[in-house]
Structure formats: structure tokens, C-alpha cells
Image (cartoon, rainbow, N blue to C red; front, side):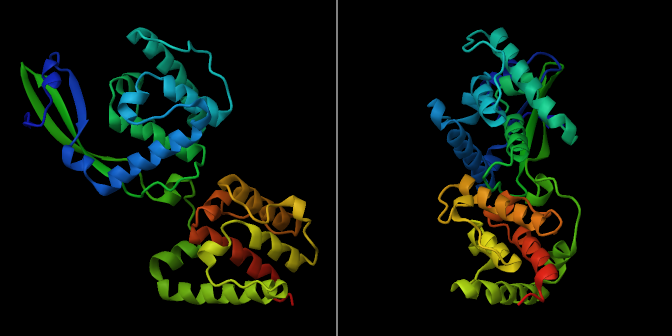
Length: 312
């Protein structure tokens, strides 16, 4: 603990004895990954709330009173919260926040995640707490966004002791890896391949491309990029029909999907066809395939390869 530095704002000197306040170190705010995280979350909130005609420009200024968080949660969870619509008083705002955060906690509790926010920290416009909350919501609702990995910020903690301000720095991890955040902790052969044998990975990709083209060529289709060409689910659906020897009715999926939801529908439908064909439920999530997650796409295709490699 050292006496406070010059970057403490004037209002932070109004602390009571032993009171504590936190803020993000200015240099961390300039970090490109931090800026990207804030932008991705802002864009996501505005996409979700587009029909509500709500535009969020600044996370800490627009979310602290609970109004936007209420609308966001109602939209994501498909529920209606029993709260007053507009509250100007601090007590009213905190009561609304309490109700919204309790609903969030009920959703997240089964996951066993540490909840790193509170009514006071959100209402106090603590950006770190707000980001923790939004990242958890995005993870829980499998938002169609890609959060930047390993975003860490330096936080300045200011405390008043014996009339003097003292500050210390701590590191706060806001995001980890995509796989950890999306809750898949079990490792498999593909994790090992990616981490330790990138040279063997290209051999696996080559084998899978040969396998899928052997069948898709019958429809005059050709795959060159595993990462992107299966992301809309169309080739996956057609491939299942070819492997199982049936024609998939076109009204069951989107042949030219445009939205994220239509692509997820296609991949989910392909997963259903796999289950019907006697395969285990794919370990990957449809959203990950649509989000161009190579490891997820490889897992799905390898699953098909092991069952159908001898099918002509």
C-alpha cells in the first residue's frame, strides 16, 4: 500500500474513513483487447435491444440504474420482471437493481460461477463489476459474439486510512479462453493436437477434407476450407443426407441462411440427423460451429469420419 497517486479523481478524495473505491488504471483502458471487449459487449447489448429503441453508448453511465439491465435480461431470458418501469431516486434504482441481480443470480447459481458484482458496485458505476456481469450473461446465454480471450486489467484500489488516501494495484481477469468461458473443461484429442502437435493437425484436416469431398462431390460441391464452409450448416445437412442415403427436404433447413439464428438452426438440424443416424450427441455446440470455431467443427466432422469412413 502506498499513498495515493496523482490519477485519483477529485471526487474520490471524499471517501469516509476506511471506505474503499476502485477504478481501472488509465493505461489498462487503452489496451486494445480491453477496448475490443467493451465494443463487443456494447454492440451485443444494442443488437439485443434494437426493438426496444434503446441505444447504449457508455456501459457505466447507461447500465448503473438497472433500467437497461432489466430490459436486457427480460429479452434474453424471455421473462418479465416485477419492477417499476422508471425510478429516479437512488433507493428506487437500487431496489430495481436488487430485483434484476437476484434474477441473474437464480440463472447463474447452478453453474457455480463466482459472482463478482453487487448492487453497490453496479450502482457505483464500477466498470469492472459491470463487465464481469455482462461477460457472465453473454456466456450463459451463448451470445453470438466472440469475446476476446485473456483480457486482464489493472485496478487501482483507493482506501482512506487515518485521513490519508492509500492506493494499491490488483490484476482483474475479465475473460479466459473461449473454451473455459463456454463451460467445456474436459479435454480430448483435439485439445492435445491444437496445443502440442500443430503439424499433425494439418494431416487430420487433409483427411477430413478428402472424406467430405468424396461425398459432397456427388452434388458437385467442393470443400477447401473446413473453418468456414461448414459454418452455415448447409454442407453438414447435405453431408448427412449423402452418408445416410436420403434426400433432405429443403423446407427443413435454410439453403441460403442469412442470419446467425438461421445458421444455428441448420447446424442444430444436422446434429439431430446425426442422432437419428445413431451417433452420439456432438460435443460441440451449434453456436461454436457457426462462430467459426475450428476445433468444434473438426470434432463434428471427425465424429462422422469414424462412423462413415467406409461408406462409398
